[in-house]
Length: 256
Image (cartoon, rainbow, N blue to C red; front, side, top):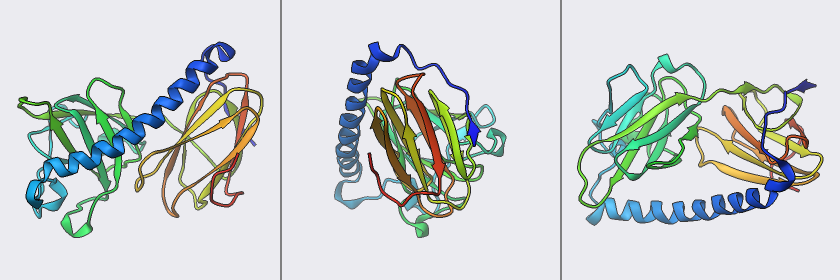
């Protein structure tokens, strides 16, 4: 069994109510994002005109002035993730343009023949960045909607997400941690002991992020597609409530 050191998560009992509200807000925002993305798509393509970079045989490439951390473009464009950022997942943050932008993710050199790139993030100006399971050479497809009357390029930053590699079998810990798994298994069971809330965000290269929650002593199961490198973002309301992650031992699905 592998053990991970606890990470501070605040004053447990006093923050349960606030944490519940925060998780509820995440759910509401997710629903709003789905509605917003649909409206965004319709608004950007009146009459069926193509405006997305991936729909072009010669898509626009974003440009960088600092070797790969900061990227900009005047329109929908792709970012080819540079090797200089390493092989860890990335956090992408919208710093100019907007008020929001959508991000798709594809393999190297993708064009219109490869179809719609999976939506992996919705960015909002002025808010924290969103982790994406990208690797060097993959393409991030960014489409930004400018505020009414605004002009100018969108700008995003890419920063590595520190992760702990997860092995098959059982890993125990407490608090907050970002785990990456790259093996052959496609499921993991998370078990929490003690009291408090546990949130697990499942981040893959081909699906929208999914947030699952467990309350007090309970168990849930997460699943992903074969061959994917997956990131599990564990956020525990309590530093004293332990959890274990067991990779490859449960059937697909979610349970509590």
